[in-house]
Image 1 (cartoon, one colour):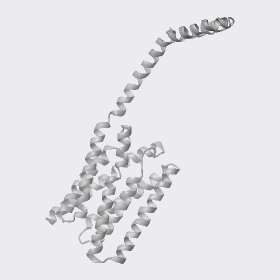
Image 2 (tube, rainbow, N blue to C red):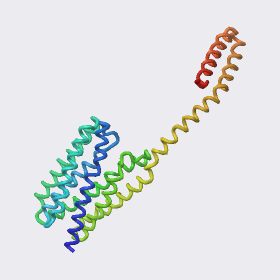
Image 3 (cartoon, rainbow, N blue to C red):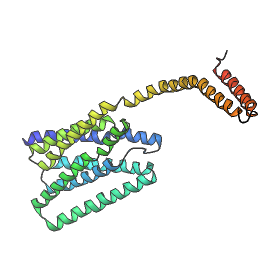
Image 4 (cartoon, rainbow, N blue to C red):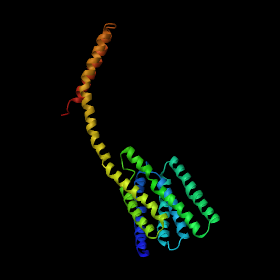
Length: 278
């Protein structure tokens, strides 16, 4: 059983490493556009906090090297991503990200270490940190819901790439079996939710991946219809103007000559525009 748990833990390390690499296309896009646009920093801040928390938990438990290795890698990648995000983010997004980092990573993580060291010892401390880690693992999987909401609202998957969702789902499966086989339910339980959210994101991607292309293909057709409507409407509008002028002539006859001259000029311009060039 322990050997099987080690295999799943090792696979979990490999897949989780791919999860950490998955946002690279996103940040390459940010680099090219020199703007974070609709991308959000919340998932990266929450992921950094969660990785730090699991490293602390792993040091309180025996035989948890696999947890330490992958979460150390996670801390490195999330820190790099956040520095990159802060560099290209607009001022408002930069301030919000800095506040969130101060709240979770500095105050939150610092308070957890301080309180657990003061009020608990041994297995009790590990149990408390494990439950806190369980709660914030839920937050890691819930954090992308803001992006899911944006996808449903805009019917576009531009800001929800497929690869992170795919690797997140695989990672959740591996870590669920790792925690289940070790009877460490603080690790196993949150990954059930991670699996469900990963499936949800992939389904939404398949639903909306062609929505933007369909809109772009429809746009020229709509523009042509507008032009045709304008061409058919022009004579009708001119007739209405003439009727108004005739009514006005009953009151001010001198208006007729001015308006007629203007209409003749406009008709000449329309003919020149609509005539095909030789």
